[in-house]
Image (cartoon, rainbow, N blue to C red):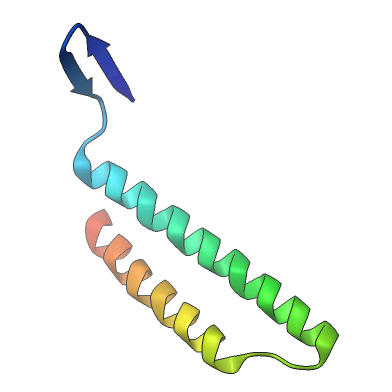
Length: 71
């Protein structure tokens, strides 16, 4: 949350907290995209494996970063 007093801006969240929230939101959105891709692919009898691998790598990368920030 940002509090504005005149020209002064005070941020109540630290940069690390904002980054943690960003990573969590990215992981969540990637997982939702993977679920959508799998469900659509199952309906068409064709699942794009390459796209799923890329998204899975991103989830793994972001999860590792989030874990390091939580320590």
